[in-house]
Amino acid sequence: MIMKAEASGRQANLLTRSFIDFLAMYGHFAGEDLDDEEGGDFEPAYDEEDETGGRGTGGRKPRDETTPLIPRSQQPPQGDGTPAKAVFLLLKSFVGTGIMFLPKAFENGGLLFSSIVLVAIAAISLLSFLLLVESRQVVPASFGDIGGHLYGPLMRLFVLFSVAVSQVGFVCAYMSFVSTNLEALAHNLFEDAKLYPSYFFVLVQLIVFIPLAMIRNIARLSFTAVVADVFICFGLAYLYYYDIFTIATSGIADVVLFNKKDFALFIGTAVFTFEGIGLIIPISESMKEPEKFPKVLTGVMIGITALFTSLGALSYATFGSETKTVILLNLPQQSHLVQTVQGLYSIAIMLSIPLQLFPAIRIMETCFFTKSGKYNLKVKWQKNTFRVFLLFVCAAIAIWAGDDLDKFVSIIGSVACVPLAFIFPAMFHYKTHPDRKSRIVSVSLLIFGAVTMIYTTSTTAYEWLRK
Image 1 (cartoon, rainbow, N blue to C red):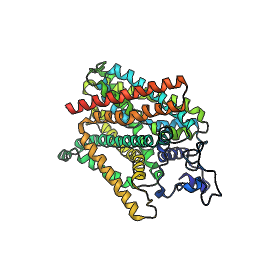
Image 2 (cartoon, rainbow, N blue to C red):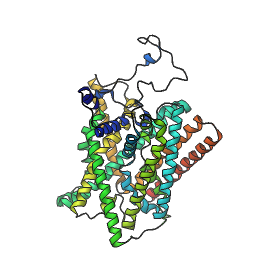
Image 3 (tube, rainbow, N blue to C red):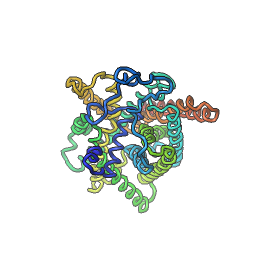
Image 4 (cartoon, rainbow, N blue to C red):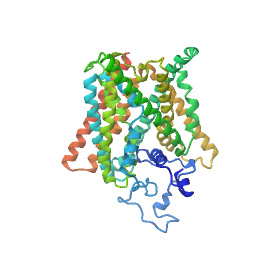
């Protein structure tokens, strides 16, 4: 879209350019080259023979230990991004559905405990993100390739597996979130809607997702990204208004400072909430002055931590022990304004799901399919079938999660997000920065991540199975 505008002598709109840039980041999620060559607008993958001095190269320099793991022709362009654009892209990366699960998470943890731990998780996440950026300065490659270069091909597979699982987990949680809202909205608007089972509202979403999953050129999803952001901002603004108004008129509800029974559920959800690590590398490498990225990232993390903590605490203080897994269900269900908020927020998340699923689809397609479908109709439809199958798998998991959505979110945060957010960056930094001080920091973060992953996963699984 941007290239077409410039080719015709018109300057692309700044907002349009920012959203297109954000979508392009998903083509390089976690620094990986996930562009789909079947989309028609992307450059083809590099010719391995070109990199090794084969035919057609004029005898290029062969690969050695100094050769970048990702050829420069495939790396996202660096040098035109401003700090303001980086702030926009980071906010887009971090603010999503996770914030809607925080009020219930605050109930699970307790008001004081949750507030302190959320700030602590944010600080540790920031440290981990910065360690990942520092590691990439030593090994200029993707998230997975850094692991492959430092620890071997198996580590690269572990990283890509965690990325795929986390993205599929996000999609399942999103589908369950939308289903819960659509069911509540339908029951309030249509009497006959009560005849439909809960799983119907998960399956009906596939009518929207299947056509969107067929899109190869991710830039075509720019309109959905714009609409989704507008609706999310509207929903958050109304929730803030309702919480503050209710507390001012009715006082604080029955809250506890620490919930010793379910506090472990909060930790997994908190990690799930800071879901933007996959875009740290592509955003940092897109800046004109990448040395400013740590300061930009720190400012954004402070801002979103204030947003997450205030909304979680306010909503829990408003509804207390009656806080539901999806906070929008606590709002007056007969209010037309609330119904509008539920409808718009559900649409926003539905429009975000194809973006979340894109990295997982491309990672799995590169594993299962060796041929391009650009000129092979059979391969293309095999890939289409696989994408539809994956959507049905996500729908089945969303149906299975059901009323235990808070526990499912915590499990995904513990199993997939903790390794990506804490364990892998610590392991990479340990190898790339061998000085004593850096290694103490890396080992401490690694131990924290491992203990957090084991404890929260086992505790959440136990609570889930016991029920």
